[in-house]
Length: 97
Image 1 (cartoon, one colour):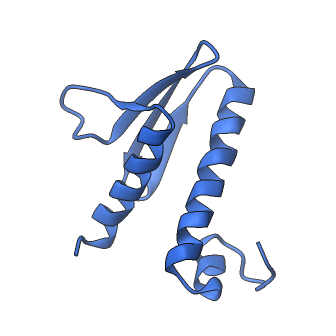
Image 2 (tube, helix red, strand yellow):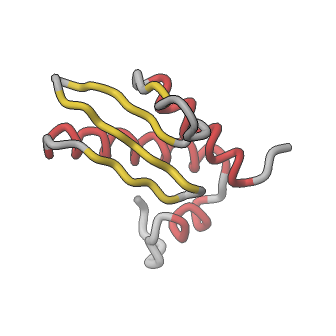
């Protein structure tokens, strides 16, 4: 069984691949991805659980962020109890997400 960091990388990589992203080569150890959406390039870099994204078009960036967040929340719900998910997503109130 992979460590948590590796499992997270596998989850994120699978999502990005389904969304059409490709890894940036060479030499970045598959921790940087790129895609062009509506003529705008998005670059996404990752280290452990930190992400940096770059895109000149805010609507494209927002759309990516919403899709990414929905996917991660759905994935977490499959794997973790609801209270643990809320803590991970920064929802200490215990209300539904």
